[in-house]
Image (cartoon, rainbow, N blue to C red; front, side, top):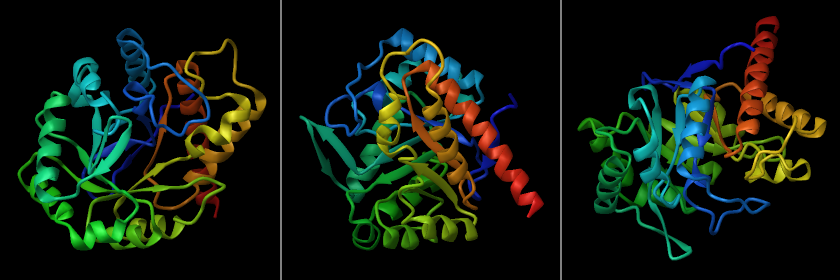
Length: 287
């Protein structure tokens, strides 16, 4: 299997693997929307997962303050910091089983500085605003973007953007920031307009919910917490490949963030992503 391709993250000067590793399951099992229960892995399992991801060509890792103790664990366990592109977030806190949101300048600064400490690094490659759904209000009525721009100017972060939830917010954000994170999968295409707009502006585009938080694969039990022996089912293989091929066929997409704590499924996701990218690139050349 060929190496996992890397792509420019818009005009940030950062190259990222076309598949990134989401890490909510490294730090939080409460209040998540996955179809099945899972057990947060121990340190040895996390170390093995990170080593496997790196060996497979993944350099993009996605975390957030709202992901329990994911940031702290990555800060302790991540090896060779310089080889990773770290994406964290600001705006959402998850405490006592519930989310709260704060997009003020003061909280944004403190959140970035806290993430730097937790992740044991002197810079973050990317910080995204973790939207509560009111994307337009966050952009137009708070100092969040301006504060992140100052953090970028100060060298604390290399780029910033928003993990949004609305088409209007994504379209508004694209000209104002470096990266947008949008939902996209064959069953949800509302934000294709945002992907196209961001691509036209040479901004980075990260995809979340490619597998609808695991629900698209629930029937094949693709993302169980514990590895299952043997290969994934034929239905799962087909669903994963068709989903990734659909997303990578959208011009402008930089990388898909897919979270898993199952080593077998991580390998399968990388194989499927590599194949899907190769096919879509060949199709474009023929076209």
